[in-house]
Length: 171
Image (cartoon, rainbow, N blue to C red; front, side, top):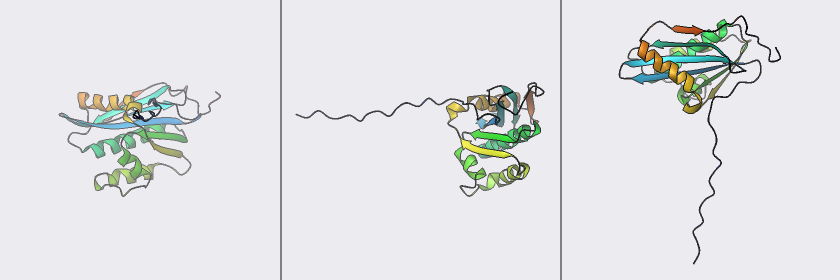
């Protein structure tokens, strides 16, 4: 009698937020939808994990794709305002990430937002986009959910001392 062979389990991979490469700022963005409406949120940190800025805004009855793309646009605008020339952008919505990278046909609901984002990034800024699982995007998720609570249609910014921000990893 042969015993059944069970498959060897794959290694468990810890999913969490990770610092960007030295000299980069990392933007995590997220959108959310609840019974009160939709909201966008973002968190901007340096390569040491230090918080630079976070923001959120309420978007009333916007679709989730619009909330996600708005969060990306708001966060990139905040990141560019710091003067950084290296930016890593992460979000947990694959459609928005694939749309900004030109890997899919952009859904009509976010075509204008995606074009706005492309137009706002100067050619001298190294801007990388990547998908992150939800578990690695919890701070941005929290900011988006906070936007549903405060219901402010203007962006609420939470800033930290930028005068101490250096764009060189050895400083």
